[in-house]
Length: 289
Image (cartoon, rainbow, N blue to C red; front, side):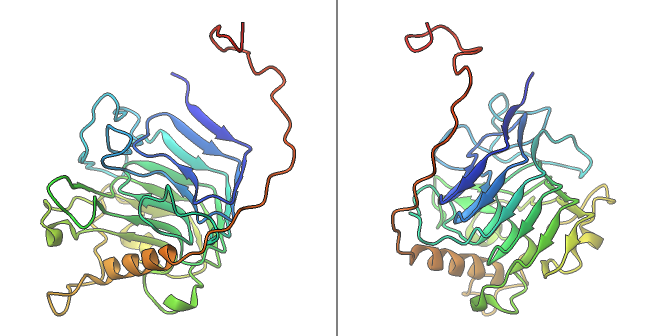
Protein backbone atom coordinates (compact mmCIF):
# COMPACT_ATOMS: atom_id res chain seq x y z
CA UNK A 1 0.00 0.00 0.00
CA UNK A 2 1.35 3.43 -0.93
CA UNK A 3 1.58 6.19 1.65
CA UNK A 4 -0.28 9.46 1.35
CA UNK A 5 2.34 12.18 1.19
CA UNK A 6 2.83 15.91 1.56
CA UNK A 7 6.29 16.92 0.37
CA UNK A 8 8.15 20.10 -0.63
CA UNK A 9 5.20 22.34 0.29
CA UNK A 10 5.14 25.85 1.73
CA UNK A 11 2.27 26.20 4.17
CA UNK A 12 1.64 29.61 5.75
CA UNK A 13 -1.02 32.01 7.06
CA UNK A 14 -3.49 29.35 8.28
CA UNK A 15 -5.11 28.59 11.62
CA UNK A 16 -3.57 25.13 11.21
CA UNK A 17 -0.82 24.56 8.69
CA UNK A 18 -1.70 20.88 8.55
CA UNK A 19 -4.77 19.34 10.18
CA UNK A 20 -5.19 15.57 10.10
CA UNK A 21 -8.35 14.95 12.09
CA UNK A 22 -8.80 11.23 12.73
CA UNK A 23 -6.40 10.31 9.95
CA UNK A 24 -3.52 7.90 10.28
CA UNK A 25 -1.93 4.82 8.86
CA UNK A 26 0.51 5.36 5.99
CA UNK A 27 1.01 9.10 5.91
CA UNK A 28 4.25 11.06 5.42
CA UNK A 29 4.61 14.84 5.80
CA UNK A 30 8.15 15.80 4.84
CA UNK A 31 10.60 18.36 3.46
CA UNK A 32 8.10 21.20 3.81
CA UNK A 33 8.01 24.64 5.40
CA UNK A 34 5.32 25.39 7.96
CA UNK A 35 5.56 29.00 9.10
CA UNK A 36 3.47 31.96 10.14
CA UNK A 37 0.46 29.77 10.90
CA UNK A 38 -1.34 29.87 14.23
CA UNK A 39 -0.21 26.24 14.73
CA UNK A 40 2.17 24.49 12.36
CA UNK A 41 1.26 20.78 12.24
CA UNK A 42 -1.72 19.31 14.09
CA UNK A 43 -2.64 15.68 13.50
CA UNK A 44 -5.51 15.34 15.96
CA UNK A 45 -8.30 13.21 17.26
CA UNK A 46 -11.70 14.83 16.89
CA UNK A 47 -15.23 14.16 18.09
CA UNK A 48 -17.77 14.32 16.54
CA UNK A 49 -16.22 15.63 13.30
CA UNK A 50 -14.53 13.53 10.59
CA UNK A 51 -15.47 10.08 11.92
CA UNK A 52 -14.31 7.55 12.84
CA UNK A 53 -11.93 8.65 15.59
CA UNK A 54 -9.12 8.58 16.67
CA UNK A 55 -5.99 9.84 14.93
CA UNK A 56 -3.82 6.70 14.96
CA UNK A 57 -0.42 6.35 13.30
CA UNK A 58 0.07 2.65 13.99
CA UNK A 59 1.10 0.70 10.90
CA UNK A 60 -0.88 -2.39 11.73
CA UNK A 61 -4.12 -0.73 12.78
CA UNK A 62 -5.31 2.12 10.59
CA UNK A 63 -8.23 3.59 12.47
CA UNK A 64 -10.64 3.29 9.54
CA UNK A 65 -10.40 -0.50 9.84
CA UNK A 66 -10.32 -0.74 13.63
CA UNK A 67 -11.99 2.40 14.95
CA UNK A 68 -11.39 1.91 18.65
CA UNK A 69 -11.42 5.57 19.76
CA UNK A 70 -9.08 4.97 22.71
CA UNK A 71 -6.65 2.18 21.76
CA UNK A 72 -4.13 0.90 24.28
CA UNK A 73 -0.49 1.15 23.26
CA UNK A 74 1.67 -1.01 25.49
CA UNK A 75 5.22 -0.25 24.32
CA UNK A 76 7.41 2.51 22.90
CA UNK A 77 8.83 -0.05 20.45
CA UNK A 78 6.07 -0.11 17.85
CA UNK A 79 6.01 0.50 14.08
CA UNK A 80 4.70 3.97 13.23
CA UNK A 81 3.45 4.86 9.76
CA UNK A 82 2.25 8.44 10.35
CA UNK A 83 5.52 10.32 9.99
CA UNK A 84 6.37 14.03 10.20
CA UNK A 85 10.01 14.36 9.14
CA UNK A 86 12.64 16.71 7.71
CA UNK A 87 10.41 19.79 7.85
CA UNK A 88 11.13 23.35 8.96
CA UNK A 89 8.41 24.32 11.44
CA UNK A 90 8.95 27.88 12.56
CA UNK A 91 7.27 31.09 13.74
CA UNK A 92 3.80 29.60 14.09
CA UNK A 93 2.52 32.51 16.15
CA UNK A 94 0.01 34.09 13.76
CA UNK A 95 -2.99 35.46 15.63
CA UNK A 96 -4.21 37.46 12.64
CA UNK A 97 -5.71 34.37 10.95
CA UNK A 98 -9.26 33.16 11.72
CA UNK A 99 -9.49 30.58 14.49
CA UNK A 100 -11.87 28.32 12.56
CA UNK A 101 -10.47 24.81 12.17
CA UNK A 102 -8.29 24.79 15.27
CA UNK A 103 -9.71 21.95 17.39
CA UNK A 104 -8.05 22.80 20.68
CA UNK A 105 -8.09 26.56 20.25
CA UNK A 106 -4.33 26.67 20.76
CA UNK A 107 -1.69 28.83 19.09
CA UNK A 108 2.06 29.31 19.15
CA UNK A 109 2.93 25.61 18.77
CA UNK A 110 5.07 24.09 16.05
CA UNK A 111 3.64 20.57 16.38
CA UNK A 112 0.43 19.99 18.33
CA UNK A 113 -0.43 16.38 19.21
CA UNK A 114 -4.05 16.60 20.32
CA UNK A 115 -5.09 13.17 21.60
CA UNK A 116 -2.74 11.48 19.12
CA UNK A 117 -1.58 7.87 18.96
CA UNK A 118 1.65 6.46 17.51
CA UNK A 119 2.95 9.39 15.46
CA UNK A 120 6.64 9.78 14.60
CA UNK A 121 8.07 13.33 14.75
CA UNK A 122 11.62 13.00 13.47
CA UNK A 123 14.43 15.04 11.95
CA UNK A 124 12.62 18.39 11.91
CA UNK A 125 13.87 21.88 12.74
CA UNK A 126 11.28 23.35 15.12
CA UNK A 127 12.02 26.92 16.12
CA UNK A 128 10.67 30.29 17.24
CA UNK A 129 7.21 29.06 18.26
CA UNK A 130 5.97 31.30 21.07
CA UNK A 131 4.51 28.72 23.45
CA UNK A 132 5.76 25.22 22.59
CA UNK A 133 7.88 23.52 19.99
CA UNK A 134 5.99 20.23 20.41
CA UNK A 135 2.88 20.13 22.60
CA UNK A 136 1.15 16.81 23.26
CA UNK A 137 -1.95 16.52 25.38
CA UNK A 138 -4.66 14.21 26.53
CA UNK A 139 -7.82 15.55 24.91
CA UNK A 140 -11.36 15.18 26.31
CA UNK A 141 -13.53 16.23 23.37
CA UNK A 142 -16.04 17.89 23.55
CA UNK A 143 -14.77 19.90 26.52
CA UNK A 144 -16.07 20.60 29.13
CA UNK A 145 -16.89 16.87 29.25
CA UNK A 146 -20.43 15.62 28.83
CA UNK A 147 -22.21 12.43 27.75
CA UNK A 148 -20.75 12.58 24.22
CA UNK A 149 -17.15 13.21 25.26
CA UNK A 150 -14.43 10.82 24.17
CA UNK A 151 -11.37 10.92 26.42
CA UNK A 152 -8.65 10.69 23.79
CA UNK A 153 -5.27 9.80 25.24
CA UNK A 154 -1.74 10.74 24.18
CA UNK A 155 0.04 7.45 23.63
CA UNK A 156 2.80 5.78 21.66
CA UNK A 157 4.20 8.91 19.99
CA UNK A 158 7.94 9.24 19.30
CA UNK A 159 9.76 12.59 19.12
CA UNK A 160 13.35 11.97 18.04
CA UNK A 161 16.36 13.57 16.35
CA UNK A 162 14.79 17.00 15.97
CA UNK A 163 16.50 20.36 16.48
CA UNK A 164 14.42 22.62 18.74
CA UNK A 165 15.48 26.25 19.08
CA UNK A 166 14.01 29.29 20.84
CA UNK A 167 10.56 27.96 21.62
CA UNK A 168 8.40 29.03 24.56
CA UNK A 169 9.41 32.71 24.64
CA UNK A 170 5.90 34.15 25.13
CA UNK A 171 6.40 36.57 28.06
CA UNK A 172 2.97 35.66 29.45
CA UNK A 173 4.37 32.25 30.41
CA UNK A 174 7.98 33.20 31.12
CA UNK A 175 9.30 30.64 33.57
CA UNK A 176 6.31 28.31 33.18
CA UNK A 177 7.29 24.62 33.22
CA UNK A 178 4.80 24.03 30.40
CA UNK A 179 6.25 26.45 27.83
CA UNK A 180 9.35 25.43 25.89
CA UNK A 181 10.66 22.83 23.49
CA UNK A 182 8.60 19.72 24.32
CA UNK A 183 5.58 19.42 26.59
CA UNK A 184 3.72 16.15 27.12
CA UNK A 185 0.80 16.08 29.52
CA UNK A 186 -1.85 13.58 30.60
CA UNK A 187 -3.38 11.77 33.51
CA UNK A 188 -6.30 14.10 34.10
CA UNK A 189 -9.12 12.13 32.46
CA UNK A 190 -10.46 10.85 35.82
CA UNK A 191 -10.52 14.39 37.20
CA UNK A 192 -13.18 15.23 34.59
CA UNK A 193 -15.25 12.10 35.10
CA UNK A 194 -13.48 10.01 32.48
CA UNK A 195 -11.85 6.58 32.60
CA UNK A 196 -8.40 5.71 33.87
CA UNK A 197 -5.76 7.59 31.91
CA UNK A 198 -3.52 5.65 29.51
CA UNK A 199 -1.39 8.48 28.12
CA UNK A 200 1.66 6.24 28.19
CA UNK A 201 4.59 4.99 26.11
CA UNK A 202 5.41 8.28 24.43
CA UNK A 203 9.16 8.71 24.03
CA UNK A 204 11.64 11.52 23.37
CA UNK A 205 15.26 10.89 22.32
CA UNK A 206 18.20 12.30 20.40
CA UNK A 207 16.85 15.84 20.10
CA UNK A 208 18.74 19.11 20.36
CA UNK A 209 16.85 20.82 23.19
CA UNK A 210 17.67 24.42 24.08
CA UNK A 211 14.65 25.36 26.21
CA UNK A 212 12.49 23.83 28.92
CA UNK A 213 10.63 20.55 28.70
CA UNK A 214 7.74 19.07 30.64
CA UNK A 215 8.38 16.76 32.29
CA UNK A 216 11.85 18.07 33.07
CA UNK A 217 14.81 15.98 31.82
CA UNK A 218 12.34 14.39 29.45
CA UNK A 219 14.91 12.29 27.56
CA UNK A 220 15.79 10.39 30.73
CA UNK A 221 12.59 8.85 32.09
CA UNK A 222 10.76 9.32 28.79
CA UNK A 223 13.66 8.35 26.55
CA UNK A 224 13.11 5.92 23.69
CA UNK A 225 15.72 3.60 25.18
CA UNK A 226 12.95 2.41 27.50
CA UNK A 227 10.48 -0.23 26.33
CA UNK A 228 7.73 1.54 28.28
CA UNK A 229 7.36 5.07 29.65
CA UNK A 230 4.93 6.37 32.27
CA UNK A 231 2.16 8.89 32.05
CA UNK A 232 3.78 12.36 32.00
CA UNK A 233 1.29 13.81 34.47
CA UNK A 234 -0.02 17.35 34.69
CA UNK A 235 2.01 19.23 37.28
CA UNK A 236 0.75 17.82 40.54
CA UNK A 237 -2.62 17.67 42.23
CA UNK A 238 -4.95 20.65 42.03
CA UNK A 239 -4.73 22.74 45.21
CA UNK A 240 -7.36 23.35 46.44
CA UNK A 241 -9.29 20.48 44.82
CA UNK A 242 -11.74 22.83 43.11
CA UNK A 243 -8.96 24.29 40.94
CA UNK A 244 -7.80 22.88 37.62
CA UNK A 245 -4.55 20.95 37.28
CA UNK A 246 -1.70 23.35 36.41
CA UNK A 247 -1.17 21.91 32.92
CA UNK A 248 -4.88 22.18 32.10
CA UNK A 249 -4.94 25.76 33.39
CA UNK A 250 -2.01 26.56 31.09
CA UNK A 251 -3.78 25.03 28.08
CA UNK A 252 -6.97 26.98 28.80
CA UNK A 253 -5.02 30.23 29.18
CA UNK A 254 -3.32 29.66 25.82
CA UNK A 255 -6.74 28.93 24.31
CA UNK A 256 -8.13 32.17 25.76
CA UNK A 257 -5.22 34.09 24.23
CA UNK A 258 -5.98 32.53 20.86
CA UNK A 259 -9.66 33.42 21.09
CA UNK A 260 -8.79 37.09 21.65
CA UNK A 261 -7.26 37.34 18.18
CA UNK A 262 -8.29 39.94 15.61
CA UNK A 263 -8.46 38.19 12.25
CA UNK A 264 -7.52 40.15 9.14
CA UNK A 265 -7.21 39.14 5.47
CA UNK A 266 -3.98 37.25 4.84
CA UNK A 267 -1.52 38.03 2.04
CA UNK A 268 -2.39 36.46 -1.30
CA UNK A 269 0.16 33.86 -2.43
CA UNK A 270 2.20 34.60 -5.55
CA UNK A 271 1.48 32.83 -8.82
CA UNK A 272 2.10 29.10 -8.49
CA UNK A 273 3.33 26.63 -11.12
CA UNK A 274 0.71 24.12 -12.20
CA UNK A 275 1.18 20.37 -12.41
CA UNK A 276 2.73 19.31 -15.71
CA UNK A 277 -0.01 16.72 -16.30
CA UNK A 278 -2.81 17.06 -13.74
CA UNK A 279 -4.77 14.16 -15.28
CA UNK A 280 -1.96 11.63 -14.99
CA UNK A 281 -3.18 8.60 -13.06
CA UNK A 282 -6.64 10.09 -12.49
CA UNK A 283 -9.75 8.01 -13.30
CA UNK A 284 -11.59 9.24 -16.39
CA UNK A 285 -13.97 12.10 -15.58
CA UNK A 286 -15.40 15.23 -17.32
CA UNK A 287 -12.25 17.24 -16.51
CA UNK A 288 -9.89 14.42 -17.51
CA UNK A 289 -11.54 12.66 -20.44
